[in-house]
Length: 83
Image 1 (cartoon, rainbow, N blue to C red):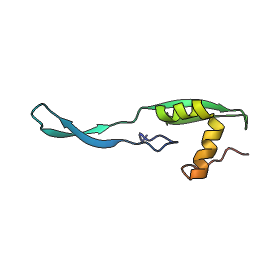
Image 2 (image 1 turned 90 degrees about the vertical axis):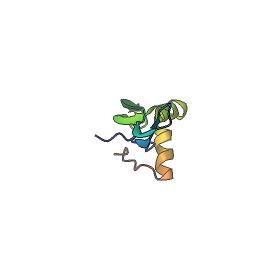
Image 3 (image 1 turned 180 degrees about the horizontal axis):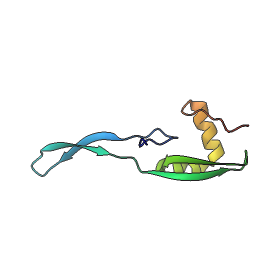
Image 4 (image 1 turned 135 degrees about the vertical axis):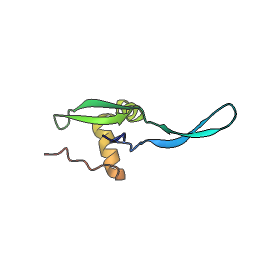
């Protein structure tokens, strides 16, 4: 499974470890991802998403349904919740 947030699109980025003597070696910075189950009362459905902590904070602030609608409007995700 790839380490990519399903909502924000955050993914692993490359960088350098820099030692005291300023030698650089490659390393990876991983996003802080969690697999979380959300209930969407507007459509009476549970969804499981792999989301970053940033996305979780936005969901807490705006609500899951409105945040998904906002991302759909931007074109970041395709929403297929309506049955």
